Image (cartoon, rainbow, N blue to C red; front, side):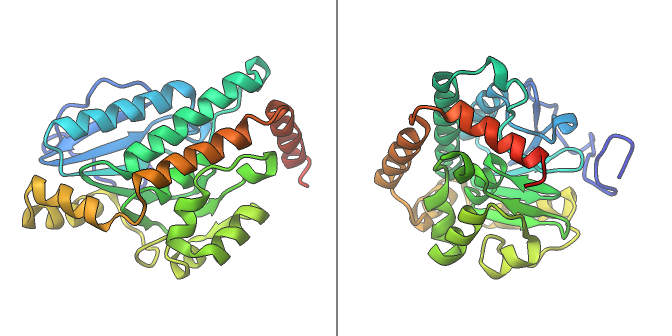
Length: 268
């Protein structure tokens, strides 16, 4: 790793990248028609704060309206994304947590239905909402050190379950969600969460793959292909949101999260 926490050899050429768009907690750079959306809260494992979710949502809107044909999502530091940022849980209420979870689901749906190719390059911990964001991407690549975990069911949350099952099948999704156990990159590949075997892929190589795709097709065709190949409908999105709201609206969600975090600290 470099002193800045970026994997060695990672693509960061200012000569070829456009100036970053002004966001906080993330950066959005352009490489021609390809956007590079980077989660930049390495000190907190790129965990998703409420503000960060809003910034990702806004970045998707920016790319949807400026001719971007593909976006690569990646994380700074040791991990892709470790899930929700619950570092200030004491100040939350059941209602504020419900609102946060709803905003995350709406952002995930927007990423899933974006008119451009959505690609994610995972490394390190890709857990919780970070794993859901990865699973919502149309191109899913990972380095060998990536692990995936879906712990939300431990505190009664149903988020991203149907999108995961659409990729992996009900058996693997049920196992991973029910157990909450970390899943290695090789296992993730066997069950189609990854579209190719894990490899030491850097940003430049991932951008080159996307460039090959966009060089063949214009923006309209890419958007049409995205729509035609999505296996889930807008009605499915509404069902997912309803399931999430019903699970998160159960009284005591804050207390359930507190118990889960205490058990994790105790190694249970």
